[in-house]
Image (cartoon, rainbow, N blue to C red; front, side, top):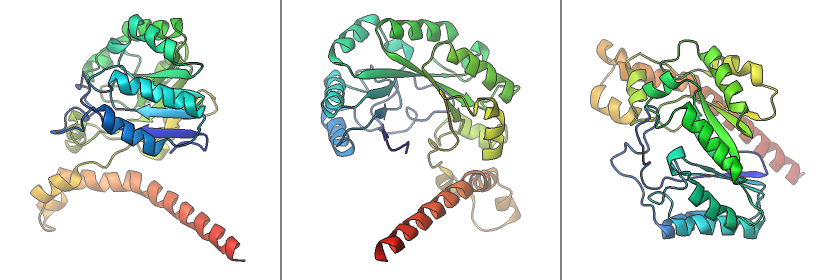
Length: 298
């Protein structure tokens, strides 16, 4: 995932200290992996073995929350990046864990390494933020961005396209991008997609909300297509939803009731909207691998 000079490491580690956002399920699962130094070090050592330009270390919560990322591992990750010559480390964090004291200490340890904090703003609308149950408002986001800059850290902002409770997704996204650009080094626009244990998944199953397909997503993002600091992620962070568990319990056979069951309908929609692109991607990869192998045999 990412370009040749970028590496992304996604880990689950402890529970998010907030855990109430309606689109997320990382802290709603019955069980989550432990947040131990030994486990996180083992994952990192296996995944990061050589220099990369940018390392995105995503832990589904807060990098500065010691219940998710122990300080000992935080220091080890920074040391590892410095030793390998990584140019930039990108981490995620909720504003409530970003304090001047912690940033001051971290600044002393980076030794020239650029560290960027990704803030999950999602949308520049306090009313929608409240409805999707985010832990902070726009004023807090602005304050956090300013304190990060004060200590020399970068700011990356996550926005989500097509959130529920948004009346006009295109207009909302454009307003959010313009707002975020004033305080960010980069902006990541992510296609909203619910995880299996999230309330938003139930909204999808209930027909209250639907994810965008690729054409729809590209349509509302079109204005910023050529903006160098705005990135787009249609299905890069989409996890496999919990359809199978639900369908096994509720759908048996091909009766009219089963074929019109909301779980079955949503499963079909998932396949149509996302699997087509993944199949095309795999076909391109297989074709390229075949061509390279044929060339080597000539």
